[in-house]
Amino acid sequence: MLLDLHQPLKYSVKNLQKQLKELRSELDTKLLKISSAKSPERAELFEYYSWLISIIDRINDYENDLSAEGFPFDLSYLTFFKRCQELFNTMDTMLKEPGKLKKVDRNISTKLCLMYNTLQTFLDRLKLSISQLTKVNTIFLELRDILHPQTEKDRVPLNWGMLDNQSKVENIGQKLDELKEKAEKKAKVNYLPKYEHNAWKIIYKHLKKYAKHLNPEIQVNGQTVLLPRTNNLSETGFRDAKRKARRTIGKKNLSKYMDELPSQYFYIINLEDPDYVKTVYGDREIHESFSLIDRGEIGKTMDKMKAQRQSPKAIDYKLIRNDHYLQLLVNHFSNQDDKSKIAS
Image (cartoon, rainbow, N blue to C red; front, top):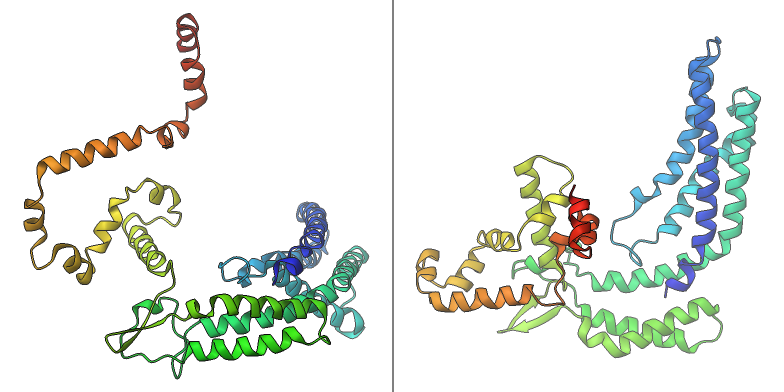
């Protein structure tokens, strides 16, 4: 629905980002010269140039408005366009009402007008494409809103699989049927623009095929249970594990730390869940369950795991991430005489 409308914007966005980067570099150089000057106007000029730079930085900070969910839930180029529109509207007000703009250095006003014209060209070029993307995104969000369970009062949190049994959600199946009927009618008419007509056809086609499998509500022993999203429980568990790790080591960047943790770490995290413990160990204490395990079976399992690690399909990350990997590679394929030279 959205890919063919969103991706073509990439080239215009990248082009503008390149222009803004070059302009910012010029402004940085100018700011550096001003900071080392001794003229009485230095402080005022420094402030003006800092503001010009802030406009560019404000536009480039558009990712702050994204939800980090990725395409199609985040439309990065649409968000970038909105940031540009926001800054352009502000500059438009300033430049079209001279009374609101102080008399400034000619270079500053020239740069301001340059930025204004650059943004205007960009916005005018993409105006129609953005309008189409926004309209189709509205249709997409209508479907997404239905698929996100909602109680009688509020939207259900993302970890809806952890709701208690008392929570009652709206009838998702009925809403999907209503949208399917609406999409079928829209797909048959011939007065809609092609892009909008195609969007409704896609909605109808997929709902016709998958609607019965999209409703997360199932009946179990007379009760309605709300199934979590496919990867919701693993995401929630990983997030909790990272929070605990951050409190333990006190570092903001945990990438390296998390990469080096053994997979068994998450089994330990699971032990905090009483339902998990009961499912795995029953009514026994954990140490009692371990005492019942056959040592011979453990040995067989360990041998099997070692054999799997030696499989040609296995990736030896310890080797390929070694700091001296290239040297080790040369050593491995060198003659003995060459090896001694390399070692020396």
